[in-house]
Image 1 (spheres, rainbow, N blue to C red):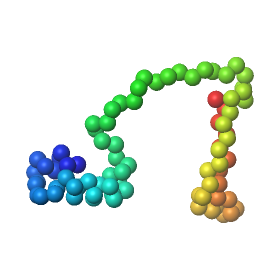
Image 2 (tube, rainbow, N blue to C red; image 1 turned 90 degrees about the vertical axis):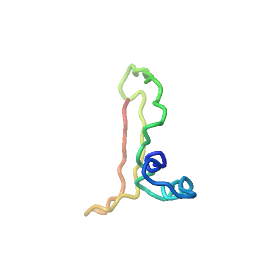
Image 3 (cartoon, helix red, strand yellow; image 1 turned 180 degrees about the horizontal axis):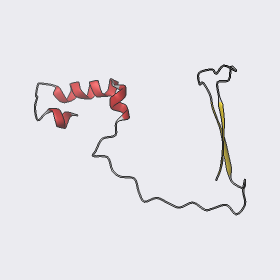
Length: 79
């Protein structure tokens, strides 16, 4: 943000002011910057030899209630 703005604007303490605003802005926290390093090469995973051999379970809770008063999801992943 600072690099983009400094081409057009400038004031004393500009970099500190921009850093403070960006740190408080929820939209700014979600946007990825262009100068981040790329992730590494993808790494393959072993394929299980039988179904349900390797599985994960998780609960997603705190969702808005449905008409049936449910507020969570049970997530099962069979790799």
